[in-house]
Length: 132
Image (cartoon, rainbow, N blue to C red; front, side):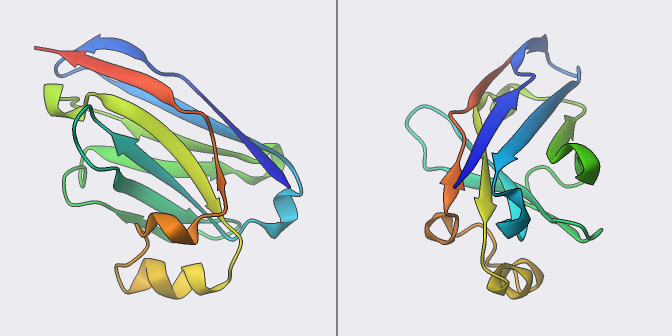
């Protein structure tokens, strides 16, 4: 079992920045990929970014490319999401999720990493609100 705990959400004005953290505990050695998703009211959940655990490969959703950066501190079992130049459209609940299958490497590379059903563990989410 893996537990994921997000933190760092809050309210910010458009153009500002936030850094989210996703701390993993439990059987973290089983994690292969960790991703950030978000869901705005009335909208479907969408993939924001994904990182290969213990590797440097990262992939992003089109709406956040160039503004968000995913990174990790392997020693602390923590994945971060640095969000810059925030827009009101970024307002959502942000979740981190862990995929324990090595197939996630292929999914990340071929652009199918945002398939929610492939992620075994999910955090409770942290709210991000961006005002104009």
